[in-house]
Each structure stands twice: as C-alpha cells, then as structure tokens.
Amino acid sequence: MFYDAHLHGGMFPDLGHLLKKLKQEEIAPLLVGTTLEESLNTLASLSSLQVKPYVFVGVHPWYLNAKGVNLELLQKCYASGMVTGIGECGLDKRIDTDMRLQEDALRLQLSFAKEHHLCVNLHVRNAHEPLKQILRNYQGACRGFIHNFTFSYEVARDYLDLGYKLSVGFHLLKTTQKMVDVLKKVGVSSLVLESDADYLHSGQYDASSLKKCHAILAKILNLDNLMLCNSLENNIKEITGC
Ligand SMILES: [Zn+2]
Image (tube, rainbow, N blue to C red; front, top):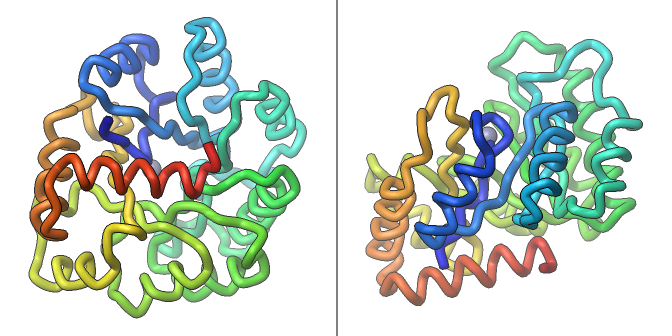
C-alpha cells in the first residue's frame, strides 16, 4: 500500500470518485482541510460514503480571516468521531496575513490537538524560527508531519528532535544534489510522501506522479519499493497512532 500523507480531498469536486480512484491505485490518503467549513463538508461526505480514511481538519494560514479559528466548528468536526488530526495549519511569512493572527490560530489548533491527543499536519513557509518556537511549547504533547519538506538538514534536525516526521512531495521530481544529501541524512524512519494535490492547482489526481516520487525516493534511500512502502506505512502509523 502507498500512502499520500497530504491530500486536499475536500477541494476535489467529487470526493467519492477520488477515493475510489485512490483505492484502485492502492493509495491510502491522509486528507487535510483548508477551512473548517470545508472540513465539515469532507466529514459529511465521508459519513455518507461510509469510508474512513485518515482525516485532518483545520484552518490553513492562507484561509485565515480576522475572526481566526472558530472553536465551535472545530469541536463540531471532532464530534464526528472521524478526526485523525488537526491541519493543515501553520505559519506563512510570504502572505499578508498578520503574523500574530497566524500564531494565535496555530496555538489554538495545537492546543486542541494536545487536549484530544491528535497529531498535526503543518504548513511552514519562511517561518521556521517562529514555528519552532511555538512547537517547543508543545514538545512531548504534540506530534505530526511537517509538510512540503525542502529545507536544510539543520532545520530538519530541529523538527525531528521536536517529534515530527518530514513530508516530501513533488520536489522529488526535480531533485538537487543538496536535497538528495539531506534526504539520505534524515533517513527513511523520519519521512513520509505526499502529493499536496488540491484539484485547483493540480487538476485531477495523478497517482502516477506519487508513484514516480516513491520510486525516486526508494532509489535515493537505496531501498526496494516494498521496503519503502512498509517504512512509510510504519511512520504514518507511528504519528497517527492508528
Ligand atoms: Zn497543502
């Protein structure tokens, strides 16, 4: 079984169709949310489809408004009994949204994850220092994935020490020697694979792209495909606890 550790299923026009396609391709998805309204829609679709993939609910920094995170809606999502984790949430210094608002929204989501023993799926862009500072306050109480891993080994090491796995995606299709060296140093036990597909930018789900990334990663780590499948599955289970 392949795993897609970061997929915006709720942005696809037909979630049922997407999940059917993923099943045929033997890909287990970790669905992430961008808003709580979208997360609630995803949960409603899943309950009518009677399927239970890994589901993350949350507010992405790009979709934050001045009201921040609506705790009531977050609780409503959680009450579905289908929530694996919180996300996509995080910090992004390349957008106009005030950093204080972003940090408050992140703290609220991390506190919710901590309270309910949930893992998190994190977005970070140009904001490693403030993110690490916040995560240190939750060390030992929160665990999760850092999505879109492209950064240096030094930055990666700090996230690993804080209890996170690194989620690597389409950048594998255009690897640099620097990235290969960092991935080797990080090692298979700290990695997961993602598409970050969202329909809006990616179009229909491309299973062959995820599998191509999988083969590239296997080659970099000097593993056969099956060994890599098993390791990535273990990493997902270690973080999600299921
Ligand atoms: Zn994403």
